[in-house]
Image (cartoon, rainbow, N blue to C red; front, side, top):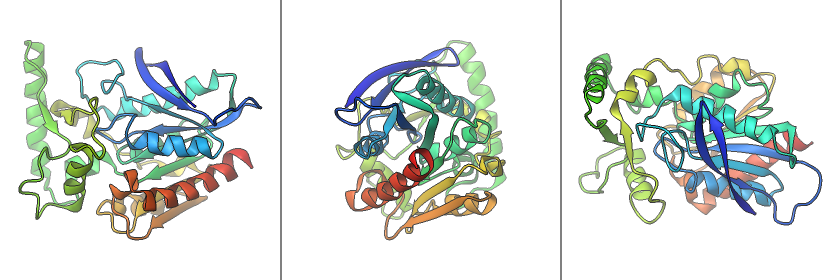
Length: 304
């Protein structure tokens, strides 16, 4: 069953969808917050995972981040990592208020950029009893250092110059300047990294595109992103369990590998053989493997 819900985060109303097992009328459920990628919305890959978790007997809450999708917040498309982490905490808070959810059995998982935001939130929110990620990315590492750490420090300095100028321009009434998350067209992408070619195919085609996923992020977000580090204190998640799932062929897999190295036990890196970053969004042969491991993980730590 899927129910539309709303809940507050830093004074903004977030739009969510709560998935529960069909026909459930029994004891309060174990629940998982599922947080969407940067540039995504709740109806895309987050709902793919939430629906399957509900089939396995969990409640699963997806939501649009503040400033995005159907949630409140101006300017539209702002990507503030600290607000994104606060949204995860707010989703947990909302679940604790529901009579059909057991507040002692709440976990969280994040996909792509939320594979950074969820662990970051969990470092200090002990209500999150189990933490999982799929195709995790540290948004600072991706945008500031470049995929595979191919950008020099001068790129960030130039973006910060722009961010300051753009704040001034907005104060004078100009519209926020934005950049695309994914290329709008496949043209000219033959030599591009797999992540960007597949992001275009997922987000900008009927495969995964959604009317509320605008493909735009506010460029001045970079002055908040630059101060953020998803995994700087990842050891604080311990002794709660951490599971990070990545495709063996993903060009972002180094984020998961390095985060797991820094984390303390109990921890696990689960590689889906042959999968790329975006394969784990919706390709059934890969998603099914990830879901099997996720249901086992949450089953052990939230139910068992």
